Image (cartoon, rainbow, N blue to C red; front, side, top):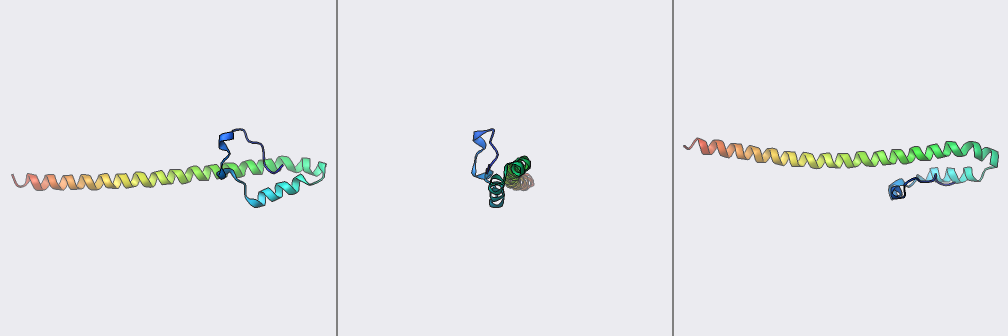
Length: 96
């Protein structure tokens, strides 16, 4: 009972690894007597699911921030290019 069963095989990545403490707790619960284990296993499964969900959300946020940083770099490049074009246009039109 070290990990809850997965529904999607493609989700099994290094990102879904559980913290060591959580794995140790799951192993300890699995070794408990039946009545205690039956009470704790559903709670442990919820904790494992929540941990995986938080990890996925964290990864999505990191990816979104990386994409935002890249988009900002492109926008800054475009802004500078537009300013250069404007300045060239202004300097060229005043010579007429």
